[in-house]
Length: 262
Ligand SMILES: NC(=O)C1=CN([C@@H]2O[C@H](COP(=O)(O)OP(=O)(O)OC[C@H]3O[C@@H](n4cnc5c(N)ncnc54)[C@H](OP(=O)(O)O)[C@@H]3O)[C@@H](O)[C@H]2O)C=CC1
Ligand SMILES: O=C(O)C1=N[C@H](C(=O)O)C[C@H](O)C1
Image (cartoon, rainbow, N blue to C red; front, top):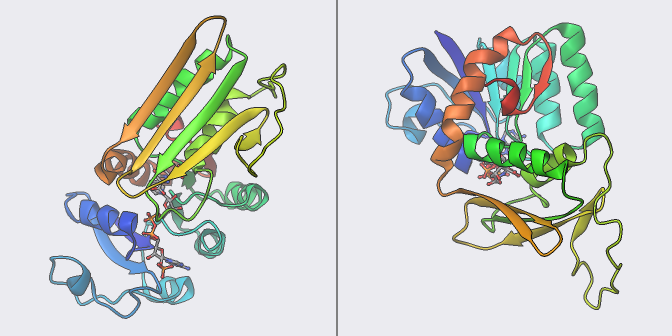
């Protein structure tokens, strides 16, 4: 039995992940942390009979709860503290939170490697999104012009999405620079051309109605290749999250990307 705690348990992902864990025969939800619902019991949050109270701080959770895996779906500016404290307690960590500073992530990755504790992060847990990134990486070997459009719900805290950044990183691995001969048009409205990673323009759309969507567009001579993925519900992330919870204890260090667990 894998005992799991959820950081961000009151959030959109935290709630769905918790409900999914509760249905697994080999997992037990033993607690959570989230200042938004701190002090509430698991009975109050979910349809179960469990008087365990949610912590408001990671320190409180670590002192009062024994667990095998912490899963974090919070915010990029708060997740590093939670990860660091959890690694200090030598407990495995699975992270879905995006928007974490790259240098912070490197530091925490080194910490996990030194401690030989499992630390897994996926900017996107959906299988379709992982394939979209793999296909974009493959196309990027042959095509030198590309832009990314990512579309999300309007409650998203970070832009661009972690998926878009990861896609651009995978496409330009080996430091390939895209769109070299594209005219640098004057922006009549600030940011009209989007943000840029190794020449790849990234455009972020935020509207109610969207869940998580991305198009990678490649331009060629007289042709356009479009690779598109749509998460139509947050259920799309659950199989990947469960896989990571089951595998993280075998990692003995930092691993990034669901493709490395498949
Ligand atoms: N990797 C993947 O496949 C996916 C990743 N994500 C990422 O997951 C993250 C969460 O997304 P989502 O659930 O939509 O966001 P929500 O805003 O719905 O949930 C985040 C929750 O974390 C809480 N929180 C804030 N600070 C802390 C803290 N220090 N400790 C514990 N909890 C805290 C928030 O409380 P409050 O509201 O009071 O701040 C909120 O309840 C985002 O970074 C998003 O990009 C989302 C979907 C899939
Ligand atoms: O905030 C979201 O919703 C999502 N965030 C992740 C990201 O930033 O890529 C994954 C997915 O796109 C949903």
